[in-house]
Image 1 (cartoon, one colour):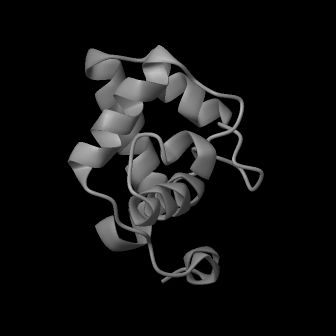
Image 2: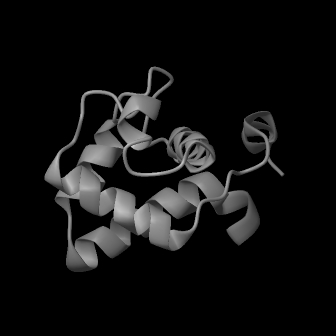
Length: 99
C-alpha cells in the first residue's frame, strides 16, 4: 500500500445502484454543495453519510462538500466517455487494490 493511500484510510462503500442513482439525480440538478440536507431528501441518514464519505474519497466532492471538477466532468459525460471517466476515478482511488 502506498503512503498516500494509507493516509486515506479504509475505502468507503456504497452500492453501485446507489451511486448510479445519485449520478442520475446530479445530472438533473447539481447543487453548489452536496451535503446531508441535499442527500437526506433522497436517502436515509446512514446512506447519506456513506455517500458523502465515498464522494470525498473518490475526489468527487471536496472537504467543503462542493462538487469537484471531476464530478462535473463525470455527470456531463455519457456512454464510453463516462465508462472511461469511471475507470480513471476507480484507478485513482483504488489503484492500490487494482494493481
